[in-house]
Structures are given as structure tokens and as C-alpha cells.
Amino acid sequence: MDNKQGIIEGGPSLLKIRYLVSGGIITNYKCSSKCKHCSYSSSPKWPDDYMTPSMADEVFSMLKSLGCYSVHVGGGEPLLKPGKILDVLELAQRHNIGIEYIETNASWYKDEASAKAVLKELKQHGVHTLLISIDPYHNEYIPFWKVKALIETCSEAKMNVFPWLMEFWDDIDAMDDQSPHSLDEYARLFGQDYLVKLARRYGLNLKGRALKTYKPLIMRQPFKRILEESKPCKLLSGIYHFHVDLYGNFIPQSCPGFSVPLKELVHGADPGKYRVFYSLESVGIRGLVELAEKEYEYAPKTEYAGKCDLCYDIRNHLVLELGLDLPDLKPEGHYKYI
Ligand code: SF4
Image 1 (cartoon, rainbow, N blue to C red):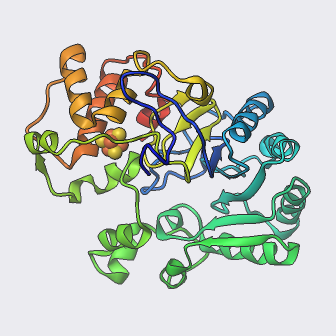
Image 2 (tube, rainbow, N blue to C red):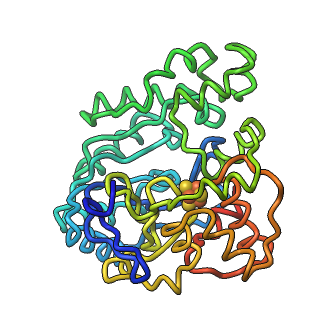
């Protein structure tokens, strides 16, 4: 998406969003699992924070003003405590924002009766589809019987299921469904290259914990070549699959760990306040390197597993090593709980 069709007026002036089409609400980052493919670095360690009703009210009204009339709900695991998201769903209804689906990993499934009660409540709040995660990464934490039982219960409760992804069903079903299974077990059963092939089959976004998992397998590139190939990352141009998190921050389509409040982007955010974000948005990795070397004593290594590895190395330096409280590198949990 380029600037003509898109949303950003970067340039030397303001960071601004003009319109959004479809995206997701991250109601919480906390999750029951710590999946190796999670680009949001969700895990049980995150604080038990959920989007508040007043934040939801503000976010939905902004989304409507930007032309976005439907969202999905994701996390973390949004149904970790189903009661915590009901107010958010109610506010979506009040604003006439459709809920396309709620993403869930099925870990909360205990028995049919309690699951039916949750599904009934969700339906009463305008939710008619659950996206249920089906992949070996989740199966490291969640026994497959829970996924199967939730799908069955959805069918009985007339809740639609968006299986993500059926492609992995047979792989997972080849294991005992009563217990979780490590990726090592998958590699023993399907071959040592399973982890690499899995990333391709899944279409993995190599950011956050996913990058950490796969970094040892990614070919190294010289630092200098990464800089030569630098181009703007266009963080604001993802108008079809953006996210807004529980703190009201706009999370770019494929790059978590950045945060600019949506309410500032609507009116035009000051690039001087969000310098890390702006350097990547406007110049790309070369811009961030220049900023980090000049102002934050960043000493580059000779090679990296690509530009995003370099980007994370700098961001980790700023957040974890220097302990800086930078407004565009939030939430810190993205770096801390990887
Ligand atoms: S270099 Fe940084 S901002 Fe650009 S795509 Fe990679 S992680 Fe995202």
C-alpha cells in the first residue's frame, strides 16, 4: 500500500493515519502459553491487564471515524478470563463495530457445560465466530483434545469456527491428544527439518519470539550490506491488518513492540516524540542505526540475521540494557518476556 492509497503522511511533518479498513483489538497480552512462533511475545508472565471499557469506548469511536467498521479480537489469549472482555464486546455493539471473530487457543476449555456457558455469553455480545488455533506451536502447550472438544462444542452451540490452520490437523492428530507435544517430538516423527518447514507452511512473521526461535537458523548478513539495502519500513501503511492494543496504541501490521497512541495518530503525532518509530517509518533500518549510534552509544556487530534482527538488537539495547522509557517502544513486556 503506498501513500497515495494509504494513510500516512510522513515526510518531515506529522505521523498521521487517515483511514483504516480492518484490524484487531488486543484486549490483553497475557496468555496461557509461551508459543515459539508468537510475534507478540505473549506469555503467562505478562501483567493481568485487560482493555478497560473507557479505552474500548475511545478506540471504537476513533476506528469508526477512520472508516473501520469491524475488528477481530486477539491477544494474548482473549478468553483467559472471558468476563474481562464482555464490556469491550458490549461497547463494540454500541458503536456498531462488528466483531469478525475472537482468536482463541482453546486452553480455557474444561468441560462442555462451562464452554457452552462462555459461548452463549459471547453470542449474546454479538460474537458469532471463534478463530481456533490449530498448529504444532500451540500443541507444545495445549493438548489437542481441548481443541477438538471446543470445535465440537461450538458446533453444538451454533458458534462458527474459523480453524487456523486445518493444514496442521493431521500432523497434530498423529500424536496422543491427551497431552501437549514438543516441537522436538514433531521433528522426531516428521524429520529434523520440520521446524524450518513449519515456519514456511505457517507463513510465520519473524518478529518477537518467532525471530528468537528461528534466528539460529537464519543466514547471517554483513551489517554494511543491511544498511545499503535499507528502505522505509512503512509501519503505518498496514490498513487491513493493524492492531490497537489495550493501552490504545496502534500496533503496526507486521511489527509489534512499537507503540504510538492511536489518538495521536488521528490528529498527527510529533515525529520528534517518536524518533525510533519515525526513523524506521521514514528511512528504515539505516535511520535507526544512525539514531542509535549518535544518541545511544550503540555499537554495531559485524553481522546480523537480517535487518529485523538488527532492529531488535537496537531496541533491546534501548529498552533492556539502557532501561530507557521510550514512548514508541511499548509495552516493555514485548522485550522483557520474550
Ligand atoms: S527493520 Fe524493524 S521496523 Fe523494519 S520491518 Fe524489521 S522489525 Fe519492522
